[in-house]
Length: 513
Image (tube, rainbow, N blue to C red; front, side, top):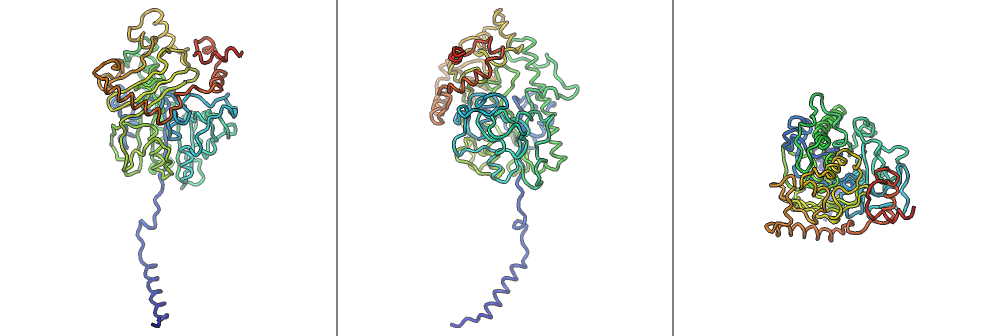
């Protein structure tokens, strides 16, 4: 059969012209712009806010409350550790700190401003990358106008595109970035630092939260020392009332700080396309039983997410158990970044998301105070395992010179504490603690010895024991002698350390002097 090539050419040309002139649909020519993603991280802030049902601060945290009402509010979000560097090492990698060996507070440290010696460097497992690095690979400009405090060796320039001073360069030791710790005084290293204003950005902005935000309380709204009831596990004395009240004021002050950040985003035209995560690294520093300990006060944190995303429905309140490791995974998912298989958290809005039955938390060495505590929280209960029960809650620690500690010790010596307070703070700790969070929100009635709860206690205990094995919890192994020596050297010349009854693990270094 002969082919009429002229006829074939004319038909082909006609078809080509037809499709080239046909109108194109909007979806084929408009590329969806990636969202900016901002982490506003409040230091040491418990959720004493109106949106969390706090009656004292109701109406006094309006900006944070509005942020929650315009997005998704998580009522039961938990940190992985009740202390900053361990918690930060977890959510910046998306991996539990006890698995990566970054669980001891202020590890991978030498001296301020100096590179960590090779023998002290804690390195992430091969192939593991931080969340900022993964976001950079997805096309994001990254910054951290605030605090790093990671317990591993890293190059800050590989993580962040801006905000690295000349003296905070490659090979630093976890302190880097702390020069920009307070957003109220540092505004240089944020979204406006990128040269291409069309490039999406991922950033971390630090606010001082429970540490210093009390100084920003709006005029006329500062709470007085007797305005806030004191939990019964504290003696009712001025220093304790002042510290407790200060944290309520800190929530009010953080509201002011968040307002400034949101206004800056709006003024710069960045607010509409930015997904905002607001959360804290752990609970209150003002309370001796919160920061560094595994009760609700140390582990429960605020978390809300707002932005132009189909899953961020205004007014949605979620009561499922959430870990800050889920913040890491959700950030990557929303940014269209690679989701490594090693992530411990979940995308909170994934179609296959499954609410966990338990969330684990861990406390290990904090500064020079050696301890090991593990905790499991479920819908109704909190289980705590103390591995050094002979070491009292008030063993030597970094807060020993604070009035809240001095006054507590004085009352103990004078026999003026209640039986519960004296045993709780200065006695041998129970190996296991088990609390019904609904019936006992202060967690003072230990049910571990109650036969009625034996079965549910066993379930929590076995979950923790299996988790320790499955994750190869590094806290079950003694800390390397070189790391302990570095800790000892960092603290040995400070009066509070010299005069304290420090842990026996340091005795070996005393004899070397």
